[in-house]
Image: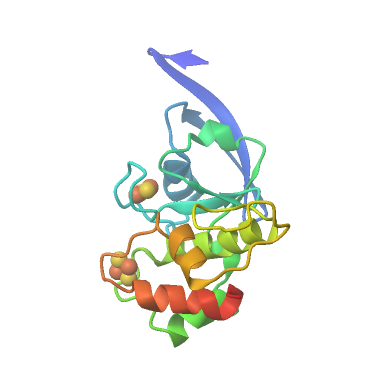
Length: 175
Ligand code: FES
Ligand code: FES
């Protein structure tokens, strides 16, 4: 559909198990859809250009940078944000580990870190190799500290909480 020279489309996305529909400018990012149309603000905008990982969410259980993903690409798919991973009444075990290991300070990067951490565990379980994986044909990749550091290298923390973040992920998913 086109209106005043702007192309619009209706998208329907399941966000944390709830169906959400919106008529949007086709240039709308998934990040904007989540924050501005669905109203879930746990997912953060950092660089808005794919460099920091603050906006990481899951589409069909795989991590994506929502600032670089068009909302129309998620049409008909299942999106999981930090609000769908855990909440204050029932923390995900990785969230509890972040608390135990001081894996955050200001918390701005934390939603993206947690989403990435959850996704990297399923990537390793499915045998998806990283650049530091020795056996490229393994059915499952052991999550050593080197593997976790490499797989989390796209999620930056300006507060410098990386050691706590890696320790938390290692406690929950490490080999
Ligand atoms: S806000 Fe998406 S990568 Fe930084
Ligand atoms: S906790 Fe502040 S940016 Fe990571």
